[in-house]
Image (tube, rainbow, N blue to C red; front, side, top):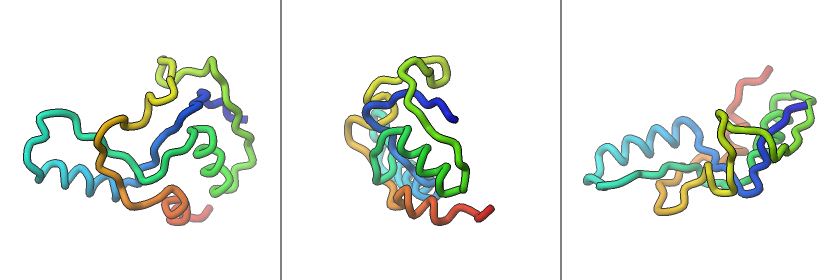
Length: 104
């Protein structure tokens, strides 16, 4: 069983290739004079994303939400891991990324 912090809200997936392209675009763009947020096209609860990943790789462990679990020592609030303002979105969705994983 995997115990995951209870992200009531969401996390954003961002595949490596999409993230790399978004970073390149940001680097070549005019200065933002601020923070450039990068995220994938899908927002979902962290527990759901981990469960989908484990299923895709054939890992039978259950994933449960734990409101006392910490993320690198800190409490995760509903919108802690998602962009709240303007964002550069990747184009590769979570299911497409899962489909590209090497088979075990």
